[in-house]
Amino acid sequence: MWIVCPIAGVGKKLQPFTYSKPKAFLKVAGKRLIDHILIKLKRTFPKGSNLLFIIGYKKRQISEYLIKNYSDYFNLQFREQKPIGYESETPYFSGLGDAILLAKEFVKNDDMFIFLSDRLPMEDYTSILLNFHQNECDGIINVKRVPNPQFYGVLTIDKNGYLNKIVEKPQEYFSDYAVSGAYLFGKHIIPRLFEILQEQQKKKISNGEEHQLTSAIQQLINDGKKIIINEMKTEILDFGRFESLFEGNRSLLSEIKIKDPLYEDLKDTGNIEDSKIIPPVFIGQNVKLKNSIIGPNVSIGDDVILEKCILYESVIGDGANLKKIISSDSIIGDFSTLEDLIKKKITIGDSAYITTSNLRFF
Image (cartoon, rainbow, N blue to C red; front, side, top):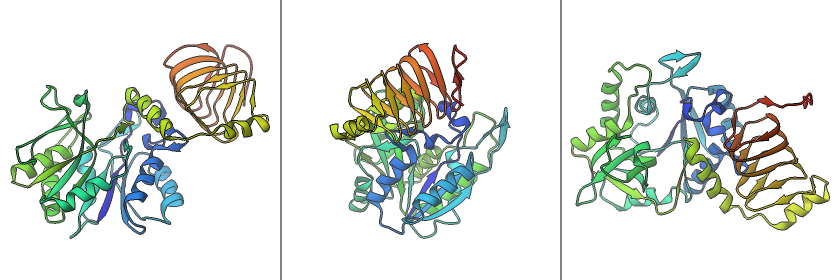
């Protein structure tokens, strides 16, 4: 089986953070999003499994990191998806369908498992593999019932449990079954899938339009292919939008069992001074807290300095330096400096500098 991850896109919904890094590199609960996902994959697939990344935006940053950290477990391969144009020097791409088509030269006479880099199941991917092999089907799609299906691919099934309709981000409600970031196609329908994607690629599109994978799946359904669903019972975390990122942060932090001795160790080193921690909170390496109240549901990166701050429901990037900040529901980018600010929902990208004094941290 080939594992395929399309990771070429810019992640516009997460700008300004994606100006300096791919969206899968956003750090939450102590790990990058891609790390959280690959840990789940390692629990599901054996060592030596073939893993193909379709890269584009920040391609060198992605490939170097993955080779350094995961080439000892996976047989890593990379294929570049070229942008179809640029807007204000930011590339835009032709969509998920064209990205998957790039796997054609690798996936031959084999099954193909696809996962998206901004969706993270709280459980691993074992259930989708088991359901595929235990049922009579040509493919299977991970789904979750959600209250806001308009943000996702949405589908319905017939009385026999097979897909009969799938639409990408529908304008009108027709189902609460949302596609949840993982697909598995059997080797006998892979040639037809690539054939459909190749025909779709010929259609001209402009910025804002995409060649979708969902339309190709609908064509497979029209061809009579039997595709079933794997309904996830636990949460599927969506890190593709700010609104859902905080929910994902809370869920990951709830999994972390941080014991009091960790805080005691930090206090012994002098890194926590006159501060209160309200769990769940993740504290990275070499973090210094002084006269602050942190938590609940705060992820703090490495090498962060927080002084006279009150923070909850927030994500703080590596190397951030915050003084006299009172905030919640905020995301602070890597190496950012903020001082003297009382504000909810702060969204600051990497290396930002906001202060009302002459104090300098660099």
